Amino acid sequence: MLNPQWLRSFTVLAEVGSFTRTAEQLKLTQAAVSQHINHLEQQLGPLLIRRTRQIDLTPAGHSLLAYCAELEQAGQRLTLRLSGGEQSKGQVSLVTPGSSGLFLYPLLLELQSAHPGLAIHHKFAPDTDVLNAVLNNEYEIGLLSTKPDNPHVAVSHFAQEPLELVTPAGATVNSWQDLQRLGFIDHPDGRSMATRILSRAYPNAGGIRDIPVHGFINQVGLILEPVARGLGFTVLPRYARKAFVRNEAISVAEFDYTAMDTLWLIHRAEWPLSARAKYALDHLKQKLVNMELM
Image (tube, rainbow, N blue to C red):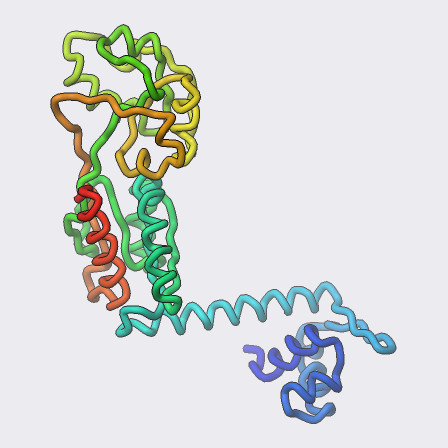
């Protein structure tokens, strides 16, 4: 274990480039700073190239400086995580599917803007990765589109996520032939989502495999771009469609029923949610209620 005071002296020295100024900034003697650097070099090898009026770092010195930065960031993260009793201060860590994440992330940033003491850590991931991230304590809360059966996570209903058939603005979709003419913009969950809508909307027609594929994209934020350009239709959760910046260029087909996905909120069952996580979730739920998405 490297002495924190030695590392502090090295970090400041690398920043200011002078033993004299380092000693002044740290309120130490110059001899003490030199001693700290010598201790580090005895363990790690040469860290500095000493020139007249100039100090450069060796490759080992650059590696140590990066290590010091990582330690500082880890300390900041620890401080944020330990402030669990404060609802407007600390880290809120959330992992979600991409479709819901696109819509929810700006709402979380809105909350952070109102409470700068919060730090939002949001990761987009498929369901299996969401579950593992929560189980491994990498993220405090997660959202899943399938309800997990795991005794180590607490599960509760968060929201309903309707599926929508999205077409280019002005496109006419009155028949199966209209969809075949438009063509399908596929994505990783595209065929399964489309099947859930089309099997009920057109029960006597063929399946999604009978519709020409006019493109494929695995980035959820870009799936609607080819649709907006008139290149085909797709099926997405409403949250992903709401997050698209050019909604005037797309339309949502109307059907007599709605295919729904449920979003499930998970966190580790062994301990309660932090006050800030509850505060963030209340904020999200209220926003979704106001938008009639709950």
